[in-house]
Amino acid sequence: MSFEFTPQEQTRVQLAHLGGVQLDPIGHADLAVIAVLSSVYFVNFAAVAFLVWNRNYPPLKSKYPFLMAAIMISMFIYFLGDLVLKAHVHVRGRVLSNCMLFCVWMRVIFGAYMVSVLTTIRSYALFCIFLCNRAFRGKYACCAAAIATVLAIVFVVVTYTMPGAQTVRYVPLIEMCSMSYAYRAVVQGLLWLVWIINAAINFKLRNITSSFNESREMFVACAAVFTLLAFNTVILYTHPLYPTNMALRITETLCSHVIANFLWWFIMFRSMYNCAIRRDAYLAEWKDKLVRDGLQKQYQIARTDPFSVTVVSVASSNVAKLVSLPRGMVTDHDGFDARTSFSRHSMVSDRMPHMKHADDGLWRPESARQHTNPAFLFSPHSPHPVEQSSSTSTVNDSTAPLTRYDFPFPPKSA
Picture 1 (cartoon, rainbow, N blue to C red):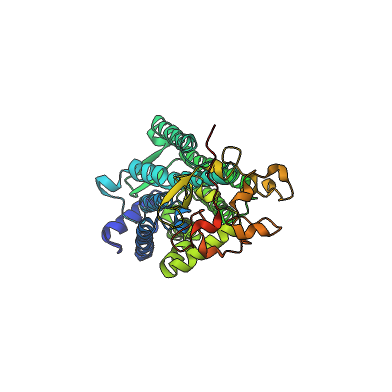
Picture 2: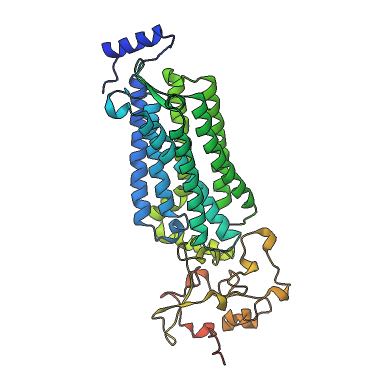
């Protein structure tokens, strides 16, 4: 594929001019865009491999590594569809001239829509964990996947029931794919719908008090994407043949993929950088934040989430094996504890004894029972440093024998 102004390309420009279309030829600027974005995605896939390899590192695990990897793959598919729709390459031959494949399936369904819906599902997962205090699995995960699938099926049905001239078609004269006004409205409407749902979910998450910036990350994502959607919608209707203009097609492509990559790295960069550069130190800081905010329960709420169960190490007085304790031994109300809820409105003061669990005092270290103020096992005010206990209610090999903690065991039922 040539990016020079060949006789064939000159003929294409002249034919477009005869048809009343001012066509900028495909040139080195398009090649530069392809080279730059291809290099970016090469680095991105290396980062995805690093992410998947270190998926059990708690700060990365809390970011849903497989979901973020799927988002990156969808972004790359979206990029491939953009190259054809925006005529950065010569749209010739049986494969590249298949506009339905590149513009509908790759750019829209497995590209823009998939990125949008996976990001929305991630927001919904945070909603389930931090506001509903329920694991994002079972009926919650199935319901989210079902809604996303139904929307995609409806879009596909609408696409294939509309007349061919009203969707996407190939224009041999100028060797480009053309999308009708009606179909542009369908595509943009689908994306706007998904991101409005995402914004509504994140509006519900606005009061969470996490030190890990979940609400801020998604607020930035929504703001940036709404700006991009508005820009794309304006371009689609004010310059319907924008791929024929080199400046517009390059600007539109760069804006779309720079914003998409910025959002992904805005969510992942800090955890991935620290995992690579200062793994142990950052993990200690991360756990310390978790404990200070009282969020260890939210981050261990489900087996599919960063931490699934409350775990302590027991073997007489020596640390030897792990056993799982039911959540009911630590919290009441079927695992819900309002004192560790993620919402400011659900925070319960220690002065409200009717909300305290009857066994709270049993979970203090023996040395802490002598203090007047409550000091839970994993409280930052505990006389034992955070480094000696895990933020996931895990007492690991670095701790002293467990005799000082006087762990209660549930009484046998009569």
